[in-house]
Length: 207
Image (cartoon, rainbow, N blue to C red; front, side, top):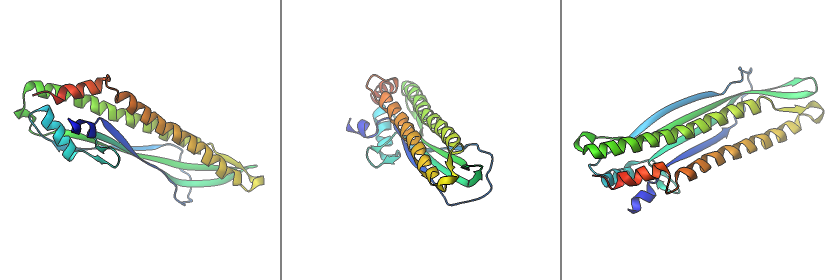
């Protein structure tokens, strides 16, 4: 049963804050969110075979091996515009977040028992809900980042140099909270008594 630990639960990957040197007219400040889902195939007529298939074909992570499912979050800041309003330097920018969910799809399920199909359905539904929660956390972060960036200001008397320092501190703080929320959620879901872990174990021994 070693493979169940290597293929345990789900994970999220993250690409944060690519800041291009694009200076254009500002668009209306609103986070743009793009979501898509891709699938990989698993097969088997027992729970053990299904998890072995996940280990072979599931999304591979550098530190923990194969995951059952992942949510990849990529965030970009574009259309950056700095302008002067009275004594202050202000910024307008667009925040774009791209979410890619990778989920398993069971091929050949009709050849398996009704009991196994029923347990897979329950487990897979919870896996999808888990990834949807990661997506929600990322969407909330993008909206908060959008609000924060478009409220930043610096002082003209300081040549707007304090603007850069303020922006870095503000963005680092919300990044830290964002990542903490993801990992805290995974830790809760990873507990032995969590519903998703119990469904995973029940599926593993099913035929």
